[in-house]
Each structure stands twice: as C-alpha cells, then as structure tokens.
Image 1 (cartoon, rainbow, N blue to C red):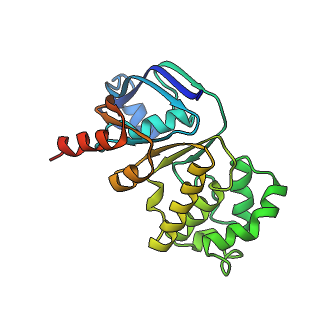
Image 2 (image 1 turned 60 degrees about the vertical axis):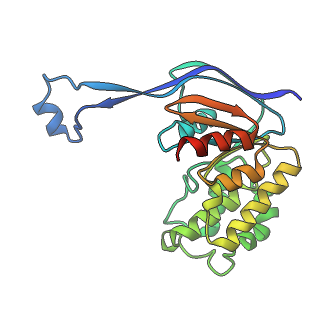
Length: 243
C-alpha cells in the first residue's frame, strides 16, 4: 500500500511574547523597549508515514501537539523545519464553521462554505436537500445564521464538510458534534469513509472511539512521538502513563 502522507524531521516553534501591545499608544510609549520572546517547541522532529486507507488516531494530553500537527497537515500552520509531502486532496474537520457569515441565511452559508471547501454550485444544488435533512435543519434554512445556536451551526458545518470527496480527512474531536443522535450519524459517516478506503487522521481524547475506529495510533507527549503502532497497545501505554 503506497504512502499518502510523509513527514520528515518536522518541527514547529511558536514565539511567545512576554508582554502584549494591542494599541497604537502602547507601541508608541514602549517604542524603545524591545519585546522579549520565549520559544515554545510545539512539535519536535516528527517522522511519520501514513498509507492510503489508514485510519490513524493521534492521542495525548492537552498541549502535546496533536492539533498543531493537524493544522500543519491542513496547511494552516507552516512548519519551522522539516519536510512534508501530501499526495492527495484534504478535507479538514478542524475548526468547523470558519468561513460562515452570520448575516447571511443558513442556505446562503451552505453555498458559501461549500465553495470554500471546493464544492461546485452544481454539486451543492444536487446535494442540498440531503445535506439539510442530515443536519436536521429543514425549518431553519432561511434564518440568518447569527440566530442559530452554536450546536446548530456546528451541525451545519459538519454536514457541509462531510460532502467533500477528498482523499484525506483531518478530524479534531469531530465526534463531539451535536447531541447523541447526531453524534451517531457522524460516527456512521466515518464508518462509511473507512469502508470506502479513505485516509483519516483522527485526534481525540475519546479513547473508546480511537480503539473502535483506528487501524493504528500515535501517542504524542511534549511535541514528540512517544509511541506509534497497534492501537490497543498505544492506548494501553497512554492509559498507564496517566494513572
């Protein structure tokens, strides 16, 4: 099976300022005093190969580098060092709803967000009724999105993202979307993607879902790979480390 993602010696450093200067006045008053920074190594020397059809879980404590790694793969962050090769299209289930416009109707946002994610108007037209039914928002599509609850917005965003026919799906705590019945529909969506041979990278604190879905798993700690391989063994190692 051929590799679809390759990372070699990838690192990411964030510069953390010692003080904030948000206003012009603050910048002028402190013009002659340089801002000091600390470096935070979010990822260190990550080597990773993901094959086509893998369902890769990424687990670890808060701040271990999980979401940073996904955002690098999604081209949201640029790595400080290292080499990345991605051989396929990506659909990111990361910060669902980015690109939504609260002053537009939900229907208008379906088209706006769909186009941002790479769908054509023709594709959206064809899938629109099924998308609205999946999101369970049939009676609300002409309402301005700013009047939606956060849960309704996330349901709509997940539904749109799930329509993108990508090679690789990047998922950050995606099964926490909505109430329990809607979460079940999300689970079914990813079961179908798994059966169709799509490549999925899944970040979660829900170890039960990691063990259920993931064919292999990586454990991150302080920005480094602590373990990689068989999901049950890696999850057991993580559980032992936090007891």
